[in-house]
Length: 86
Image (tube, rainbow, N blue to C red):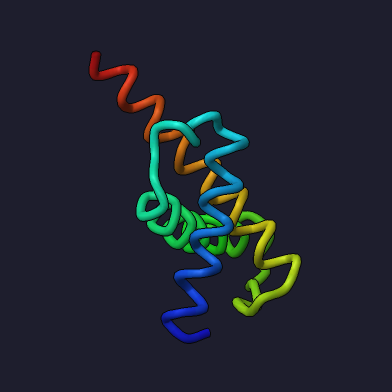
């Protein structure tokens, strides 16, 4: 995928993950893109590690689901880290 495709894919995955995690009001479009892209990498890494299966990184349902799950996990991890620092 090209850079524009990664941005669009990351924005949609990050936005959906922020709705699931309940952080939609606190993060903007830029954070949705970052969370979606980093979450896609995190989800792909976890998929390879846990199931010994690689993900085809195109616009398909499997890669989208993996990206959203990775982004939700990222949001929960960062949320837990923020709460433990307080």
